[in-house]
Image (spheres, rainbow, N blue to C red):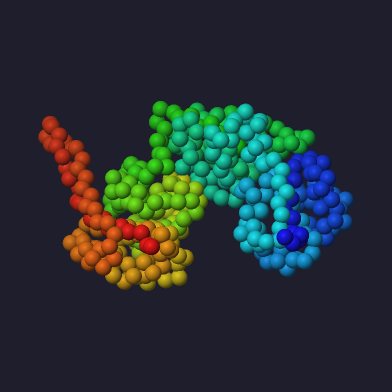
Length: 399
């Protein structure tokens, strides 16, 4: 194996003293060192050419590729492969590089808290909406959260309170390992600490009497979604998500997404799951955007337009849900774009959509299921069963 030209070095708060002699030698012999201002300040006295993170940051990969053949070191904090720059570089430059990690912020925080990493969730709100931690807020959950800066703990405290977790215990650990290391403790409902920008949060989720119980298992209550009444209802949604099979990093096309209930639950159900909601009506796209933010899926991408035209030029999906806009043309485009082992699920309540699904089933196979749901409802002073419209569901896996 050829000697690597690119080294990704994780550095601790002690600077050069945190590195092994071998890694110190790498830095001393480097021709180019890239990193943030904090990283450069921790490694003063080296002779290499210094470069700051490029702006925009996406230019980093092209800059590194131009340096191939020189001795290059990229500095990162802690473990470069744990919510850090290393993962991005490894995807784009898979050969000729080597990693040299330090203890990550998560490991240091777990030690400070006396928590087992195996028994908690490690999350990031760094450069991302704080709302994306919400799917992991459940009674008794322990969370370690990388933050964007000093304002993030207050944002997350307010989210906890808004969802009924006001007794939750919060600890902010700042500048871990540095001479100025500090710790701030409090509870969500009264959190008012001003904390340094470089910090990580530890949250023990404690439910108040009105806490929202919103697990990542599919089938959230209908009432947690803002809706105009047209949506995939809870029981049918749970069956639909089971057939779509959310997986880590997988992409869903939600065709005719309405208020976004299926797309939002898809994104909540698996880490890094992505979804594109295609919806012609602006009012429903607004509802979907609101639901995505409030239920912890702020990365939902919404596309304006009617199918099949709106499906052009979208990235290939791992799963497709057609809850509205089913036509032969939209099916043909979605099926052609769907990746191997991709899942397609179509739901329909009209005779016309049923007729098309029966025809497609005869041509392609798959599974047909009729889902009928009845709910107890008052009838005078008594109760009886009130049926919802039955839903015909056609599903299959592309092989």
